[in-house]
Image (tube, rainbow, N blue to C red; front, top):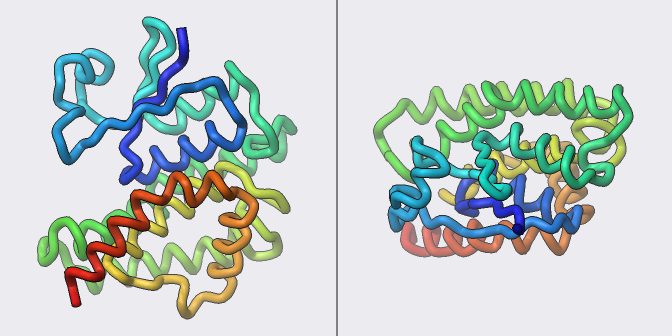
Length: 217
């Protein structure tokens, strides 16, 4: 039975996992679950994840939630390339960022996205942007200080989890890379080294961004 990864590609962690699966050519079916249509509330989906959240991995009768747990399960089952390195120290540097990002890139970028796109006026957007900029300073000064990618000199899942979070903020038309050449160069390298899968997975986000910006004009 084919392993299936259930995703909504408007979800940042879902996109990171989809890139991981595609770049490693894993025999894993990627199935879209449209949250906006309530497809995550069906009895079938809730039987896999009672919380009704994506991503979800189903491998025969086994179901798994949470993006980092799914990443490690897929790597253990199928193996991966340098995206999730085998070397104990190289992997530890990837894991270092994956642990850090939960309460940093994910939390602060998501607040800006929520405040500008989903729930305008619901939060103090000025404070949210200040918090995000402080987080971006940390990414540049710690993780990208003296290397081309977050965990070393080759692209890894750490870069994908980071970029997917940051690009979410651009849906509103915000260009958080404009005054950050180091960050822009890093984004360009990640995209170049991950294509065509990077743009394929982000095609939904690109489309939503175009429509959102057009409707603002």
